[in-house]
Image (cartoon, rainbow, N blue to C red):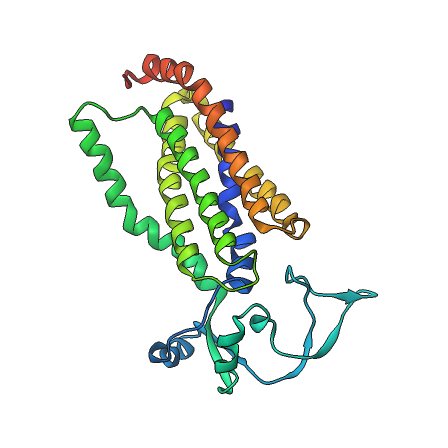
Length: 276
C-alpha cells in the first residue's frame, strides 16, 4: 500500500496543476478569443469576458506575465490590456479596429478534463475488455504503471506548446490544452480507479477503511506538492523546463512502479488470484 501511495503522490502533484500552472497558461499564453457567432450566447451564460482594445492605464507585466511591483505596489502605465502583450503584431493591428474582443473564461479550460473523463471512459473500458477477451489484459499494478507513463506524455504536449509559442512570445491555440488534458485524462483513468481497486482488494478487511484513508491522504499530499511546484513557475525563464521537470517526476514514478511491478503482481496474485 505504501508503494502505491508514493507513486500516487507524484501523479496528483502534476495532475492538480490544472488549477494553477495550466490555468495560468490558459490565461496568458492561449488565444482565447471566441468566434462572434457564439460570443453573444457565451456572454449571456457568463462564460466569456470582454476586453477593451483601447489604450488606458493598466498594470505592467514582465515577459513571464508577473505583475511588476515597486514597494509592493503594482506599476501602472498607459498601454493595452495584458492579454494583448503577446499577441501577433499583425493580428493586433486588426484587433485595434474593434472596440473590444470577447474571450473565453479561463475557468472553462478546467472543464476539459471532466469532458474527457466522460468521453474516454467507455473507450478505455472497451479497450480493457478487448484485451481481456484475448487474455492480454494487464494486471491492476501494471495499469497503474502505464497510467503514470501516459500522464508523463501530457507534459511533453505542453513542452511542444511552449516551443510553438516561442516561449510565450506568441499566443498558441487552445487545442494544445485540449490535447494535454486528453492525454493526462487517459493516465488518470488508468491510475485513479485502479489505485482505489488495489487498496480495496489488498487491504486486510479490518483496516480497509484506514488504508483507503491513506490513499486519499496521498492525494492531499500530492495536492500540496502541486502547489509547491506551481510556485516555481516564475523561476523558469523557459517554461518548457517547468513542464519537463513535471515530466521527469512522473517518469521517475513510472520507473519506480515498473521496478516494483513483479513484486506487486506476485502479491496481487496471492491475494486475489488475478494476474498473469
